Length: 413
Image 1 (cartoon, rainbow, N blue to C red):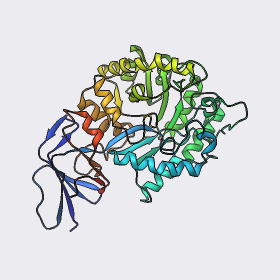
Image 2: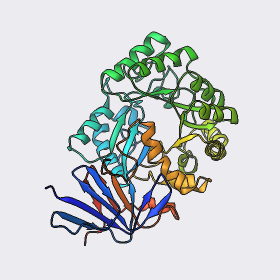
Image 3: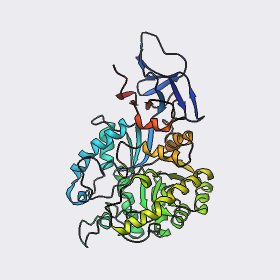
Image 4: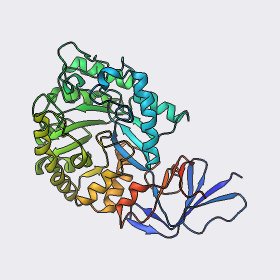
């Protein structure tokens, strides 16, 4: 008989019901939860980890990160020309570890938009984590983001490079017209992408055009959706503008990232078509644009206040909302700040926890995680208090288990 590991805490969160079960007892065998509730197992074959007054939660999920960007030692202004692919991967090792230790056991790495020579660095990072070579969350990789020349995720646009400097290839996601787009999407799928990320509109940091302006034509968007859906992959779209959201939904996009400028009609289309919205609201509070060009500061001043009203309206309308941070727009390892902002802006803590667990699991189309239940992956965290009463406790995770392995335990004497 294998050694069953019993976690004992003051309580555990039933994320579906939005209630606390006391005491918090979860039994783990191998990489799976075998039972929840009852009293601690006192048999000789069981090891008990006593987490004291903490509360157990399923591992949290961040549906928009880029672990290959940001992190210690990066010079954001020069990273495009200084950081080769090996440097990016090595820095991502630290970003991945910080993300996991913060209690986020699953993430979507949502679109490389850097020069890599065609390598899908997020796929490689995820494989290294799965193999146990490094510590990090489970990664759902998108490979290279698909964007038109001069689109929001064209990195040569971000830096205002002159023509010919550091241009990306079709394989690296710069694609125009249906033929190039098909090739770009097929390349990502061939080399391990598990979803496709597309740039559907401008953004705060776009130097070319309005933040809400649609970048790809409807014909081009439909090609992306067609290629992805035929291979069983979903499509996530960076989209801010209300009209761009409407076109994205009409063309079959599965998930809207950001959506700061959505209007009521766009929100209702998300509801009617059963589509997802990924939040990324913390950056509207915390993103430092003080050193950005004035045109970008002006965009931020217009857009960021609308982020609060649009997320409230989306929640009240019943949109399927999943948590995402857009890290490193906020620092890696500070992912729970997003949960705090969502509660501050009007979402109930229980709804926010569902957005970071069961709704996120639905978004990535998995049923093996997102709640504490028998048969699911033993992705379990603990926080020093009841998150249904005080969401800020998620910023102070003191225990992290992923797949039955403990990666953090602040309760060891």
